[in-house]
Amino acid sequence: MIELDLGKGPAGITADLLSIPSVSHHESVLADAVERALRGCPGLVVTRVGDNVVARTELGRPRRVVLAGHLDTVPPAGGNEHPSRDGDLLSGLGATDMKGGLGSFLHLAHTVTGPAVDVTWCFYTGEEVEHRFNGLVRLWRERPELLAGDAALLGEPTGGVVEAGCQGTLRITIGVAGRRAHTARPWMGRNAIHRLVPVLASIAAFEERRPTIDGCEYREQLQAIGVEGGVAGNVVPDRATVTVNHRFAPDRSADDAEAELRALLDPHLEPEDTWQRTDRSAGAPPGLTHPFLALLCEVSGRPPRAKLGWSDVATFWAHAVPATNFGPGDPELAHTPDERITVGELDRYADTVAAWLECLG
Image (cartoon, rainbow, N blue to C red; front, top):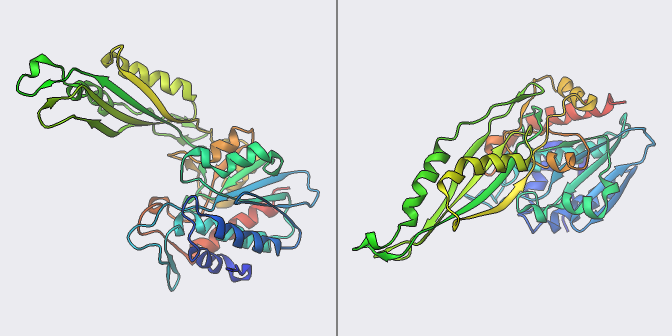
């Protein structure tokens, strides 16, 4: 049985978390340790739903904030499943995304005993995999009262900068038809792979929108992320596909983003071609006019920026809870073999969040 000592401070707790593997779908051992640690904190009401652990203060404050972070990591790479500490540097799988944030949350749950608002600490599963496995989705479906709040903070790595809102994401697989023939007589058929050329050219020529919302500039992107085709070395292929990922700004709905993508690519498609949506998630606006989120920017002492990517901020916004991303660690190190975080980063982050919680009244 693994025990977490919440008296070790953010770095000590993070080091312990790094020693507990928690690749997506295998978060149970870490959830057990987190639950036991939180049940040892006076004044917290702890609830477990599957491997999702929620701890709430019940101080009778008129306002409540939710601080949430995911327990899971991506699979290991380059030996980073073996954590290490070298002075002030902690390295290992999940150090950046996002066990540094989790360690800070556990430290704060243990030490911030008189916040100006009631606080919900949420440790959830399945953020790094398909959205249907996401623990927040399950909690909102089965126990929505556990996540109710006036605002929420996601501890995703942002380098200690408020990353406001998030982009929406859309993934489409387009299949184009051809006609098989022998490669010695290609005029008898129609090459489906060749038909992808104008589709790929339009994708490559995509001009990004860069709308500014609440002072944060979002950059839309469209990328081909997979191409498949071919039958044999002497056959003109009769089918080919390209999968595209579109990241769109939160000033547009997912329906509008898909409609614009269709308008771009439909001129190159024919009735027998296919359009299959495999993933679609709306984005979330920055919401920096909300007083709690505006105060977080002020307390952080650094100007906010747009979140270029999707996060569970959108999950909270979909349930009418304004939310933002704010966590320790360099986001560019997330999912790399070189995930690492420093003691200084963790201490600064924990101090900032503690100051925010204590002045939110």
